[in-house]
Length: 290
Image (cartoon, rainbow, N blue to C red; front, side, top):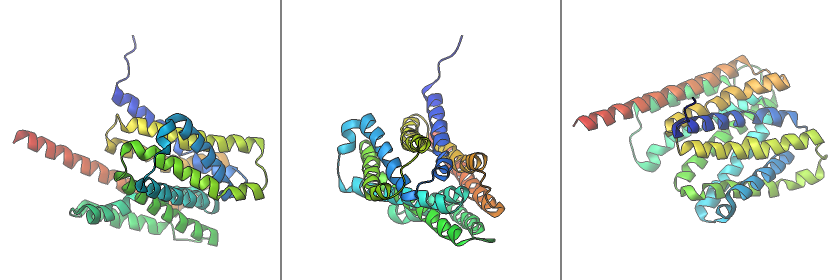
């Protein structure tokens, strides 16, 4: 006799699959021989098509908040795809996950609350981890890629902050319109470059429809059923698994210092999340006893 899954369990599974799908991006971006600009355009077209079919009228809403989020989304995907092409996938994804550092620094200023000691420690440790990415023998492409990956982290933090001022029913519109902007802006690269092969069309469709589109749908589904701190911890599977798939499928081995730096960043963010959640739990218990 099988027990039916609870809403929380379904949410956990959805978030796990979302992180798993997101983590495949680096491998397929590496395998596709097209320029990063052509990849950006075609992946965005597939993703926008899925959003249009799935969310329908909701994607055609407009506001200045939606436009701002869509611009930040454009910066995020542009920097990430280009950095994945010109540096290692590990560098690109781990440095993108520095976004929480900027949130920790900006939120006290924007929302006027005190910067806690654990947040100060997190920033210091994560900056030390970031420094490991710039140690050793790096080629020019690695350096450019690393800086673009850092920029993608800034855009991700900006997108997350902007979405806080964007009503939840307009989130999909911002992502859809961001994809349309990317698709249109970079479409000349599709026309001027070589045509994708049949396998590459399959990989591009996977990137747009499954990796990006379905991944977002699953994560949105999970967020409605799983606390934010659990979702954020599970999402850390993406930077951990991304370099693994690239190593297995493409043979790219990240530098030891990059792996160490990535583990420092992800590890510190996990520790901070657990500490903050324990603090909230204790505060709730104390309030209940009063």
